[in-house]
Amino acid sequence: MQPLIPPLPATTRALCPECLRVLTAEFIRREDCVYLEKRCPEHGLSRTVIWRGTPLLDDWRRNKTATTPAAPYPGRGQGCPWDCGLCAEHRQRSCTVLVEVTDRCNLHCPVCFADSGVTTDSDPDLAALEVRLGQAFARSGPVPLQLSGGEPTMRDDLPKVIAMARRIGFPHVQLNTNGLRLAREPEYAAMLGEAGISWVFLQFDGTDDAIYTRLRGRPLLADKLATIRACGQAGLGVVLVPTVVPGVNNHDLGGLIRLAADSTPTVRGVHFQPVSYFGRYPDSPEDGQRITLPEIMRGLEIQTGGQIRTDHLRPPGCEHERCSFHGNYLVQSDKTLDPLGLSRSCCGPDEPSSPGHGAQAAVDVVARQWSAPSPLQSVTAPSAQEGTGSLDVFLQQARRTLAVTGMAFQDAWTLDLQRLKGCCIHVAAPDGRLVPFCAWNLTSRDGHSPHRKGV
Image 1 (tube, rainbow, N blue to C red):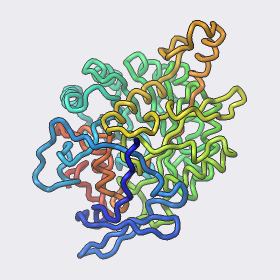
Image 2: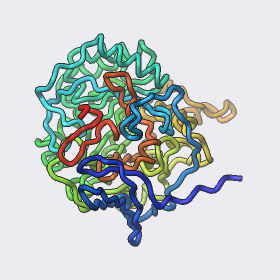
Image 3: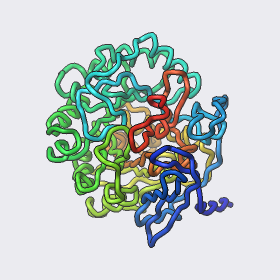
Image 4: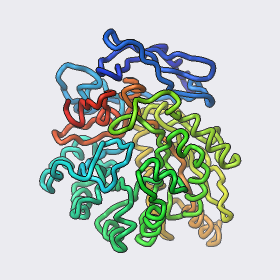
């Protein structure tokens, strides 16, 4: 018998967005919206929307059993979120490790997780990166590695970094990129593929240059499409990664899905990220500047004419349930979408599981889904009795799957320590610690960063 999912708690631990003091916070329900509310003795009340509408937050649940780090970081007695390493309070193993290989970038976007720029401190050299990668692998084991920044392609030795990561033992290496260099240097994508890149996470905010001008400071659509073509020619799978900002590109969710469907099998998925306010952003956010996961799910249903429905999408089996959604689809010959069964989704069917099991399932499924397929892709084929024709159909279908996912990162206004403890995306810090992504990028309202900059 499946155990009952415990009710959503009335309180959690959160942060003051001004001073980052740890506070008791309440979940406040108003009609079908949920707010995170806390009061700092110095800076007063802070209330931020975290969930709007259906599917209701109380229904967006998944059974899990906690797993703790095998060798917890001892910390300095300050507790979560200051003793990340991972500390003994953490409740999830790594399913992805991220390493920032540069602070430099060839864009200066108004919104940036890393607050990166063109001229910054010097990049870590190959020897320092080898140490960092080795330490990360020892703590995480063989999970996918994300190379990030800044813009990783600013490093001319990036192929050496990729090859080094594969030698150390990371089975899959993902490139997080704005795509400009891949678009403008014809042989660059093939060079990265030969070095060992598994797939490309491509910043891709919309199907109209007005969106890029608002979010990235210049028209970039032609470069983005050229990057997809270059990756396709090099045999690299691409995941489109839009940062969704209300009033800027939330009207274009369906357009992104249609472009992705038209671009299969090179494009393997679309990974929506509601805007989060850390790193670099123009103003302190109001609730009207936020878009929540259920709003994106409902927007997808409306803008795809019901091809994607909210009841197709599921909570994760890996990270905390309030962090993400996922669904997998088959792209038909007319470019319409049919949902695949739950057993083909991100972390498997909805049976109770440990976070460790969910993390491993996520690693396995992501590796299959996001890598570019080939006619000889290693997948479970139909039985011999079904005949060669069935095998041909099956392999063609394997080439036309599309993952539709979303992940809501937490900032100082929305950070919930229970969610943070369930994080499975861990940044490899220069000192050897593994730090949950939202803790690493956390900044107070005036830009103080406790982990990334050690302030």
